[in-house]
Every structure is written in C-alpha cells, then in structure tokens.
Length: 295
Image (cartoon, rainbow, N blue to C red; front, side, top):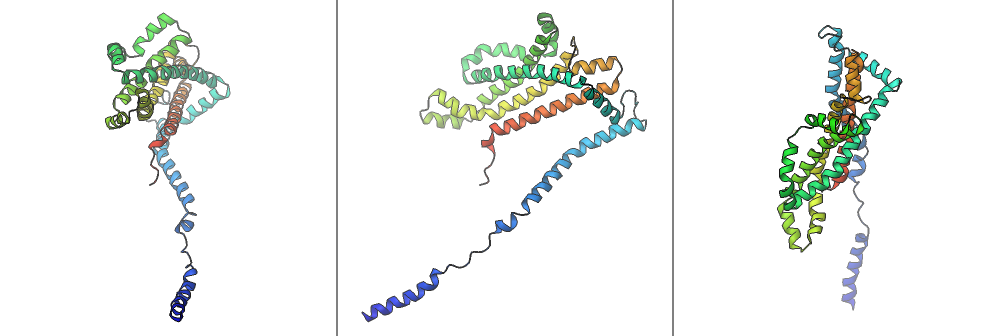
C-alpha cells in the first residue's frame, strides 16, 4: 500500500502543471487582416487606372489633334465638341428616343435568337440523326452574311420593326448555335464514360454532364451574338428607319452635323461595352463552379 501511494503521488504532482495550458500564440490573421482591405482597394484602383490609360490617351489625342491642325476639325471635331453635342441630344430627349428604339429591336432579336439557338444546338450536338438531317442546311445559311440578306428581309417583311428584329435574330442565331453544337460535342469523354458506368439514363447524363460542361462555350457564343446584335441593327437602321442610333448617325451625316454623328457612334460603343459586361457577369454567375475554392 505504501508503494502504491508513493507511485500515485508523483503522478498527481505532475498532473497539476499539465492542467494549465500554455498561452496560445497570437493569430497571424488578426494582425494581417486589418491592412488587407486597403491593399485590395489599392489594387482595384491600380487595375482601374491601368485599364483607363489607353482610353484616356485616345481621348486626349482626339482633343488635341484637331486643335493643333493635325486633322481637319470639320470632319473630326475635338472631343469636347462631341461631348457638348452628346449632352445637347441627351437634354432634348432625342438621344433617349433613338437609344430605346435601338435597344428594343436589338434585345428582341437577341432574346429570340438565344431562345431558339440554344435548344436547337443542344439537340444537334447530342443527337447524331438531327445533325445529319439539318447539317447541310446549316452549312448553307451559316456562310451567308446577314447584311447580304437585308434587302430580302425588307422585301418580304417591309421596312417596319419586323424586318429589323428578324435580321438581328438571323445574325445572332449563328454564333449561339455553332458554339452550342461545339460545346456539346467537345465534352470530356471521360466524364461520359464515368456517367455511363454508373448506369445513368440518357436524360440524366444530358442533365448532369452535358449541360454543365457546355455552359462556358454557350456563353461565349451568347457574348458574340450580343456584339453582332448591335452592329447588324445599326446597319439595318440606316435603311428605311425613322428612329434608332443607326438612323441618328446616318441622318447626322447627311445633314453634316458631324459632332452629333460622333455622339451617336460613342453611344453605340458604350451600349456594346455595357451589354458585354452584363453578359460577362451573367456568365460568372452560371459558371461559379469553375472558380477555385482556395484549397
């Protein structure tokens, strides 16, 4: 009994200091987290400044070249004159009228093209028989320029809204359709073999493998179609339109209102850039699974 007590007593004496845990070292995240927000803000400002340098340089050259006599100011007025003309059009409401007319036509044709081309491209890419049936017809029309068919659309549908929306629909269909077909056909075969080894039915393979893998390429086609929608519509509005940015540019040229003409061109470019950025944000939303998780 005495030996047992003497063996347990040192154990209790050693257990006492072990119960007191050593102080935890200060977390490095607590000290480094404070300056992370300013650093991120500084990087964002630096990136924005870098991206703006080329645009600002172009605007500066545009302003100084006519004033120094490097170009004829009659045909290329300084940027300040163009900005003044743009503000005048915006103030009297004519710029908003032409912009809404163009946006309505382009968005209608673009939306119809996406609604038609994406399902059709998925069917052609997934089902070989559908591809064999429609392939020759697609090859004929994909190599026919949309603007070459503009007189045909005007003759068949008139010079109203229907012909302009239809030409945008036709032009936007091909980038979306061809990219969707290519996306379905270029899915990783390993993923398909793995899905088939799990005895998944065809519609589940299409839903779980084909659709997620096709989204990035489909959005590439949609972004291309967004640019085409603006360009083709501007050309169509120069023929028989009474409103729209293309009509504004054409009418300003005929009336020799050169600053107003450049104001319309700048508005078209701004709409194209904004539309593309919206599509990029939408693509990131639908393809968030591709972003790294910071492992």
